[in-house]
Length: 353
Image 1 (cartoon, rainbow, N blue to C red):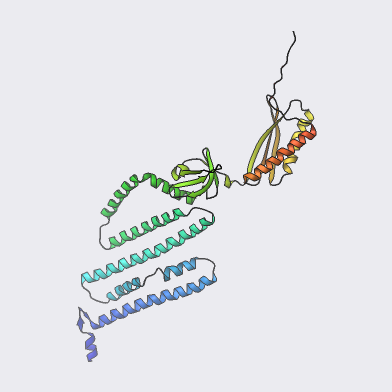
Image 2 (image 1 turned 180 degrees about the vertical axis):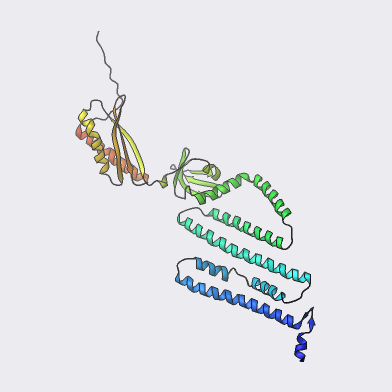
């Protein structure tokens, strides 16, 4: 046997030189191969990202290029090379555990990337809709905490640590903390509910009970409104969601109902003509849909009409300008036709004996 072949059979630290060379070769090939594959995929996705408008391919480029660590390549390559060696049980266990921890860490980094991508997409969309974005930082922290806790527990379990007692202890501690900060947590989850359910957004004019105002800020604990008279109204998020909320900004159109009364001296012909006059006046206005006009009832001192129409705009100022124009036109028409508006009067009949 040639000398170099006999050298390859030489035992060094429990393995032949040939085994050490094979393990080193596998380590280098695995490390370099992973790096080359990642670079090739990143290059392909990078070219694809330049041709598309979607951000999904940019996300995968970031995931592979930025969030994939070389340390993971090395530990994985080291583990692959160790499979070709006869190692002491303790050393083999250390390398295997290192590979598990490295894989768990890498999965955590990828998970962070996925969380950041999807939450940032939702946050950017909500920013366009004028939603408060503070809650998204809390959502990110909560989701990342759950992710890393799950990865840590799985890694510890694979490392032989009994996690049952640890999970039980964390559960008891979590219950104690939750009871201590129950009020804060209720407002926090109410804030998350506002962000996801969107009963209102910043800029909406809402009515809560007898209070009303424009939403200025949705925080983690409180929501702030600016009232019509100028002062700031502050509600805890939990109390706010427990109340009935009227959101006037969500109106597509405004239903308007008003009444007017004419005197009992009005002739029957004019009483029949009044609904037509009012219909023509309302239909002559812009951004209006006429509904009905009816002689509703006999009042104590007036003959009463009920008028219903719709303003095809949610702006309150536009509604008031239309109502003003209608009122003035009705006043002119009644004066032209000799119809008198009723006002509280009493008629006394005196009999002479």
